[in-house]
Length: 417
Image 1: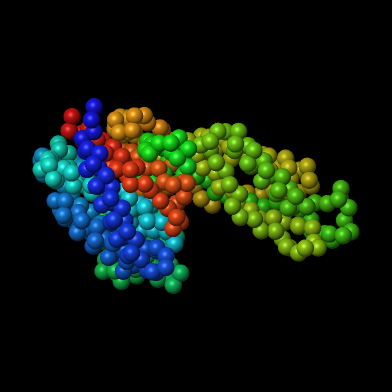
Image 2: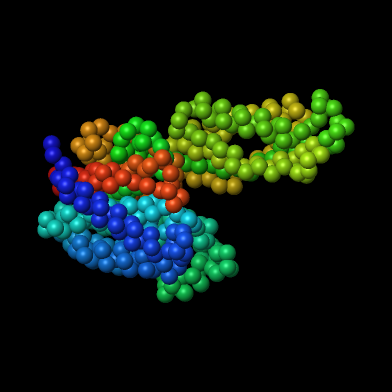
């Protein structure tokens, strides 16, 4: 069965997406590196540009009260629920140009095809460019997507950036009313599904020699501050067998973290990301070591099981070496399961487009985490070169984008059947 969008037209759509990614990449606070943060002048300029592209494909366009840019392409009935398509338009500092933006612009190609064909579906289609997924400016993430779910915590307005400007002040400076953030909340009946196309940000598709993959879940994560405490001593006078070396204990545990995580399979990962050695002198046995642990996986039960084993192993290592170990969790987010029905729809479209489908979890967070609190979510991954992301070397092939647009369109058209 042939795909709806012919290869030649899909390739033209992909080239259009790449060109528009370049346009958005030029909207940056620095000419040397791509950085576009929440409520900045660049954020508003990007919204304006995307809004113009939305209007060009027949969408009604508005900017909501937390700064998301939104467009609606009506269904056969004006009050029909919508399939929500999109991703984010903000970036990390010194970013690549496809993380987030690729999903928004590919969604516009789906709507553009329907508009060109003068075709309406039983459902409406809305496209959204989320305002702040990365949390680069204020250190809090998913502000745009939590805006549409109505789940902004009460203290978010008082959070400040590096210059001491609060979210409330940032909203005012950008022309928004901080008291009206709740107006961005959408009714549960507004949407029947959320679909997000995104670069994989990892190497699995490239290793499988596939352009596209279907996301099964967005990994949950647990982060802990940990410490091994021993006894500092003179590096020259304390015999090796009588030391309480906190760094040696921490090193043994770091190796255990790697080995135990590997035993759980490729989708559970654990990382010791920071380490501070005290007192930190070349001629002193380390008396204390502070380190962080980050564990992620597509199922909360697996994450919890691995964490329990790692903490128990840390206690064993500490006891054997005359140390004490402590750990305190400072961050937790549950795994987000992608909807089974949406996974099937996307998988069918991917098989139609590239012959076979690959299911894989997402190790990175996405707006779908927040949206999934209210609506069924599905995600389509597109291969990126080397799995590189959050870096200027981020790269996506036009052929892969073309296939992604084809599969995205086929998935949306499944609501017409």
